[in-house]
Length: 260
Image 1 (cartoon, rainbow, N blue to C red):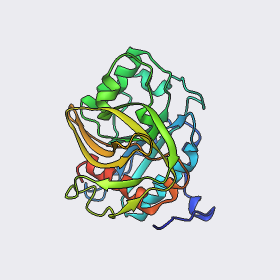
Image 2: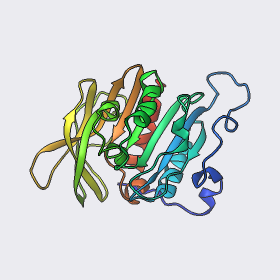
Image 3: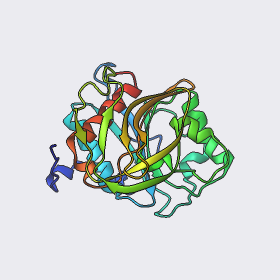
């Protein structure tokens, strides 16, 4: 297993938006280019409880650059570090307009408002692709409606202890998994207990619980309305976001979601 080592020089290009919300409809729209050279216009939503989101966002940006994937990033980091928040971005039904992909890496388990949540899922159901990472699966966990869970492709309300879990590939011929190593053991991370796999979800890999011995999905794809969704429950620790194989997996998931 190889680890990506970061330095301050590597982060020189990280935009100020990693800690501030970027105005959504003004920046990061590239000049006219041919479609094959035009960067992906990606919205990264990152904040909430329990993780170093600034570090994770930087790692993902560097991984895309390392893979040669051109991305124009807009980063929204709002809502604080608690478990309840309503981000201003989502107040508009057009919040995702102009973006090729949305990466959800937020963590707000206690936010319950159905109208607010459905404004988010409606954009994806209409066709905006998504990548969902780790605590996105527990975001809106306390709400009674299932719209967000159906969008994710899995339902989870709890996780088990941190450990180095083995990953068993289930769909080796999928383009996201073709370069994924076997065998593979995650860095220290949490195993999410999956209660339900939704009908349009394809499980790509599983990990076995050290508590109940059951295998749970940890990497998957989902078709939500017109949108492709890639998801993984891993992504808790800095060790995970320093791991080359994990970061490469996220980038392939991004590419698959936009049908590259």
